[in-house]
Length: 128
View 1 (cartoon, rainbow, N blue to C red):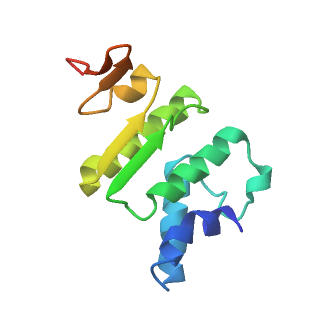
View 2: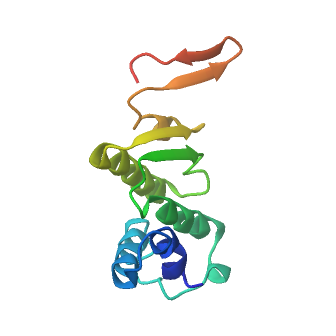
């Protein structure tokens, strides 16, 4: 599968409109910084680029719930900020719910509520 087909897969499973799915997939590839790469293949990508394709695929169908485990772990700071902005838009703009597990303070900073896991269990971080 091309990157475009890979990202469009969730849409193809629910709608026969291949043109709309392809267009939306290209939009998501652009949003994660893979502009013009829709005809490429996963075998030609770096680990960080593969992670961005997975994020685009996860968000392409505007899900009502987003679960993310270290979504920016393999990304450079600029791309990580771009991805975090996408998550924030997906949650706030689409009325979705989001749960993110991260070690990154920058990633946690976009959250409405931050819980920290420590020896005493989950503790809400105040002022987050």
